[in-house]
Image (spheres, helix red, strand yellow):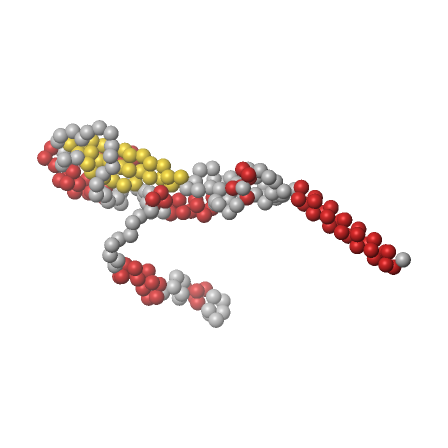
Length: 221
């Protein structure tokens, strides 16, 4: 009887394991379109938008005509130029008028960049074209909480995945175009520039190093 009971129990356990394994196998999905939603690739990525705004100003001989400086300043103010914008001067008189345009753009903390993007139309003789190239990086659709985090029977990536990191990167990148094609390294390197951050970290006092002892109830001990 003992041997029969042991054999019967072993067979029941075997059948139970087979049944459980079959049930779990039946829960697996075979939809190939579900693979990206179950990986670790970010669901939300930065999207860079591009827009070029042009302003043609009369500049006979390379000097802005009277009243053109005020018009250009009002145009800059209307566009709200600032971080993320690039200012260019195009046309035959661009080298001569660049200093005046730079002085006006400097009121907004902007510098005039060399070269100019391709724009529609031809710059008329005796005038210059000021171009404001605006690049913006955003992560559309964020935040995205349309799906609850639990329960998640298929172990899918949440629709909000990537919103935090990529939104911060899109907001902090100096030139949004770097997110598209990057930037080539210089042929030569300046060691002083490369070590400047490390030197400041080593020589500058830490933030609050002296003030913490003043507010500590134990005298900083």
